[in-house]
Image (cartoon, rainbow, N blue to C red; front, side):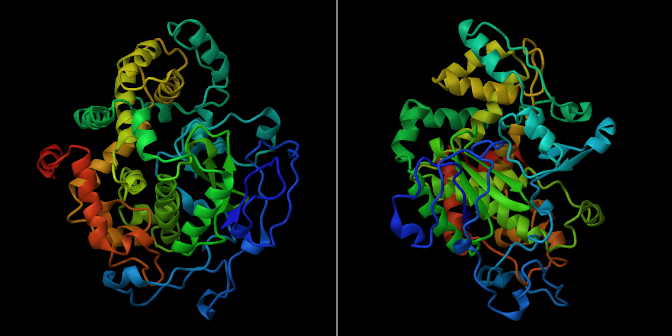
Length: 472
């Protein structure tokens, strides 16, 4: 793991046991031309250890195809690799799904897309100079963030929540993208509302639930310590750049910076009992499945077509969302359920109506604003019903996985990379499994399955209901 917390107001973390005496002092100034969390400061003493055997002697080398892949029974005991197999080339393997993508300027007029590594969040708008300095195409979710969001927020709040924002966008988004996500689904709306009400029935408000279960907010030093220990558990120390920020609008975002996997974490949302769940989501699911995918013959888009693969989502985000709450005493699926509900209502309501509708579940006006903006992304005049439906993928993926959890080979699902659970049986005889990584929390499958059952029960679901909802 490589740590980067951005500009600091101090020179040395007040935690000498975490990094040792080799930690170099950092200045407190802000790097000109860079946002506070966009600067990479690599700590050489946290670099990956030397290779242990000749097979891993070249950090950038891919594993050679095995003439006889190992069976799934030994997946849990394989030795993890020392390095990301794509370090010597751009990390295009970290793509999540067909829905997390960037606008390709070359193909913009044709409405084609290329994948990117951003999480679905309201990414902070870039300054003009930063845009000019970028060599990559903008992330789709950055393009969908209104450039006048702060001005419209002020007008909205000054109007006592009666003004429908008129959003402007700095990037041209292909109509095919907006068309793809303009329709909301109501297939799981009953389950979404049921999960939300289960939390409110038990705790009264979500804020009470968070205070009771999330634990205290962590300092930077404590966050670094927990992350370092987690990376050691997964055998990937030195592979992922980690930086801490106060500017993210999401809890965390995984991206590629300078061809290296980079995890940015929001300091304001890092809670004692929930931080490891976020790491299971980002590193234990997205990152590890990405590393495994890089070794597979279906890694490219052409390969996926050749093997007839289904889209990675909703499996990818559903699995990661389950891992976020795995091992919690109260593993409520609040966020996935509320995002699903908000998108569904946005497709039927104006911005103002949606904001007032959410008041039954969310008291904080600032939080409600953020949920509404997410659901209304892509709209200019928000006085009309309309939505950007991508956020519904989390709950859909969760429910589909829980429905089929007794028949899914979860270790194989991770080992095969960015694939749907529906493709596992078809692909396992073709997969390169010899050096596949399996996250540490999936080693004990008995305990893992018990936790999935606990999630079902906690969220007032049942196998009978899931089978009726998803009969096949």
